[in-house]
Length: 235
Image (cartoon, rainbow, N blue to C red; front, side, top):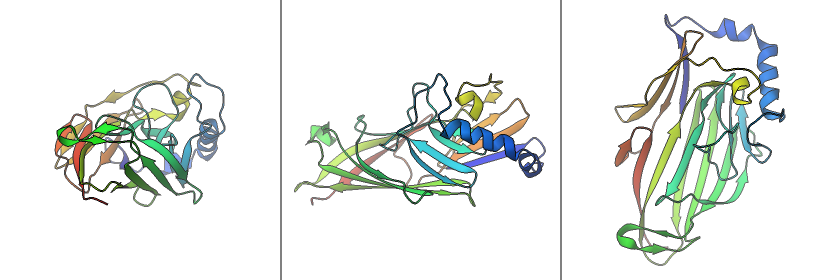
C-alpha cells in the first residue's frame, strides 16, 4: 500500500510539512495517548510505526470498515486507510497472538472459525492457520503484508478469501473528532492494471492517493475488494 501526496502542479510538500513539527507531534499525541473523543478506544490496538508512517489495527490485524474508530494507516497527519478487512468464506478470522515488539513490524497468528469451503466442504474451527507478517517501510511510503495459510487437516481443503478496503484521507484531528472536518473530493476507487487506487483532492488543494498492489491477480474484483480462492494440500 503506497500513500502519495501531491498538489495540482506536483510542487514539493516537504518544506510545508517540515515547517510544522510541533503541530505534527501534537497530532501524534492526540491519536496515541487517548485524548477523549467520540470514537472507539484504541487501548488494545496493535501499533507499528516507522518515522512518519504508522498503522493501528485490532488484535486480529483488521481495521473495521464500519463504525467510528481511530485505527488505520497514517502518513504524517492524515489517515489514508480507514478500513481493511479479511474474511474466509465471509467470516472474520479468530486472533491467536500478535507481536509488534520490534516497532516497525508485526507478526500475527490467526485461525478460522467454522466455515463451509468449496462444494460445501466443512472446515471446522482452528483447522486453518493464518500467519500474517506486516512491515512499515517509510522509504517507499508503504505497508507490506504477507499472508500465509496452512492446512492442519489430513485432507485437501479449498476456500475463498476476500480483502476489503476503505480510504477517506482524514485529518488526524478530525479522526479524533477534536476539530471540525473540511472535506474535499473523494473519487470512486478504481482498478488500473490490477492495482486498486484511491484518490482524494483535499480542501487544501492537495491530491492524496493510496495504491494497493497484489502479488497475485484477484480472481474477482469489486469496487474496493479483491477475492481469491485458496487451495491447500493435506497436512
